[in-house]
Image (cartoon, rainbow, N blue to C red; front, side):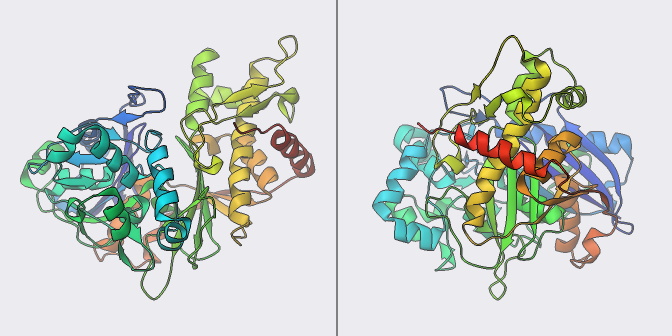
Length: 489
């Protein structure tokens, strides 16, 4: 018996095939081979075609079958993780009405800021635990204001994972965790945030019905099964945004536990059992996957947009070296990168900067002494320093982070990045042989009733631990230097 997990990212779609009995991952696939493009019709905008995600789901599934042939009838459940905060609009026939406005799109910042002021900081922070900011609800209001003809045809709005689940099952539904990430959820009322919907003049009927995070969310249709090469009737039994799912993937489910990732975005995500918020909404609180009415489990998330795109940009301008060679070259530069400081804020409005789009900058560059290795090291250091800046905000919310878990992937493949992270944040890093697609598959096993929470993590192993070393004191000084040069507009 098998489980399939999908991770719908903005760069690619990843799929994993898990053996139920052993908990071992039998095959993984990524599609496309090169990163999916983002469209930017204007500066600060970012869009993708949801149907492209669905095409890549199909292709990734076919690649799984090529790597490890399996009987589709033996698949007991499907789990879905997805890029958070995107807006997908469909009509009554489930046709996509416009490209998805995705997570790093900044066009709705002013709309959310106006709502924060007019609805009132007290209501927004105490009920939404966030400013409406640049989240899904504000993006929907942008469509209403700027594309009224499209808005009039909307039957349902959904998040990227809701869309993929709909393509699989034919049913439009979402989760409480999903509603909270869209800023559609009122934590005090334990229901849809009606005052926000009223303010934005949005009919609650546009929201999908709520399904359990773990549990039956629909079954694969005959049409979807033909496209995927699977069997009809397979239950979809789990859905979560990529960061709550990354935390689940790493068995981060209890207060005080934290997960991190440094892929397309850089994130530290910690579980809290309190209704907590940052007064400036620079870090954000969402409903975690295992939250219940009796046991509060919220995820506090700090996000850095300019992570993977900085690494990708440097790769393109320094000769398109493979990422592992970039990591090796960066390690040849001295700590502090010879004085270069990179501020990695060049991918739209940054939440940790109170939604300011400050742009990226490179400081102290000297043409006669600095080379590729200095730039590459300064980039890795700058990403870590920006993550530390966000974690310091979390610390002000009485969150104490001393140990974090990460998948052995993306920038955590770099020994330099890992050590700079441990030294700068003064934390122990545990690296695991897992990723978001595997986590979604394990969670699907819980949703299908095949696993208890403890059973779901069999087959997952900690493959390395990284502790602060003798360079810790030096990196506290380098971070202080980076922070001293940090200027907002």
